[in-house]
Every structure is written in C-alpha cells, then in structure tokens.
Length: 145
Image 1 (tube, one colour):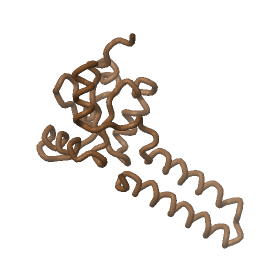
Image 2: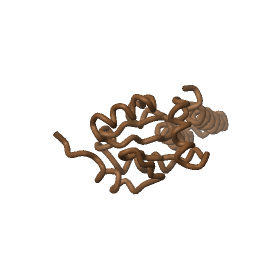
Image 3: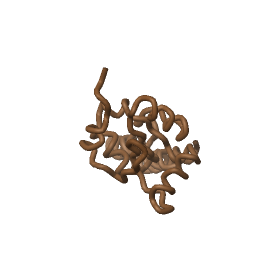
C-alpha cells in the first residue's frame, strides 16, 4: 500500500521545499503557484482519484457475474490516468485492480503481457487488452439497469 503513495509524497515534499525556498527568499506571493502545481500533481498521482480497488480474484469473480471489464492499473501511470479521466462517471462501472496493492493482479498482468507489468490492462470476457481506447472500453460495458 505504501508503494502507491511514494510518488505523491515525494511530489508533496518537493513542492513544499520549493515553496519554502521562495518564502525564505522573501517572495511569499510566488510560493503559491508552484505549491498549487505540486498539489495538483499529488492529486493526479494519488490512488484517491481512482475508484476503490478490489483484489484480482474478487474482480474476476464479480466480472464473471455482472459482465463488467476488469482494469488493472497502478498509481503514477499516465495511461491509467488518461483512461480513468476519459471514462468519467463510467469508470465506477468497472472493476479496478491496483497491481501495486495486489500481487495476484500483478501476476495476472505479467501473464497477459509476456512478463511485463504493462498497464492499463483491461480484461473483457477473459481476454486482455493493453492500453485500449477509452471509447472502446466504454462500449464493452453492459447496458445500465
């Protein structure tokens, strides 16, 4: 779990150091802009922007029942973030597995990608699709009830 937070914490520390340096230098007003930029980067790279992840086995079980795709992702991945943002509210209808939190999820991704942990990997009906187009993923969702 701490692995997912390393990048956001590092970004927060860097932003704080930059802002502190500007404040110590007497330029309080200029410290706000870089601090805000770093805070946005922290938010974008934190696991909080994604729906609550589940374990790989639980996601596969749920997908077998409801037919929804399973997305394997990790924090800090710009392609995962792109998929999440482009899906918008539909992202909640998918099953999300954080491969840094779930070793079984990481193993499933490696098995589908010749040993690489390439994400996002989306499983639809048991077939893996690496970094698919968000519009295609949206088409794979079962109709809303």
